[in-house]
Length: 158
Image 1: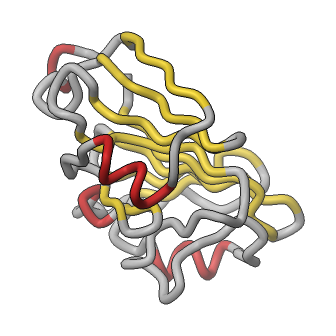
Image 2: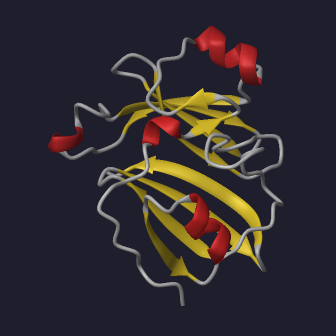
C-alpha cells in the first residue's frame, strides 16, 4: 500500500489541462468546438458546492460529452473549464506535468506518480486507484488496471 504523503505545498490546478485547455481558464463555446468538435451531448445543471468554494466554482455546470468523455464548464460564472472525466486515448491530460502528458493506455506506477506529483498530497485510494490533491478544493483521480491507465478525472470538491 502506498502511504499518504504529507507535503507542505500543493500542486497548482491552473497547470492541469486536457489537450492544452487549462482548468480555471475561460473558454467560449466556439473555442471548445474548435479544439474538440461539436459535443455529442450537452447537459446543464446545478451541483451543490460548499459556500467557501463559491469564489472558485459557482455550482452551475455545463457538461459536454464526447463519446464517454466529459468536459465540465462553470456555466453560471463565465464558462471557466472546471473538470473532466477521460476514458479514451483521444485526450492528453497534464502535458505540463509529464512530457507528452498522460493518455489512457499509458503505463504508470507509484514511482512515476510520486516523482511527477511530488508537490501534492497523494493517496492510493484503492489498489491502482490514485487520488492526488490539488490544494484542499480539487482532486485528480487516476484509475489503473495492472499498471495501465484506464480513466482519469479532475473534480472540484463539493
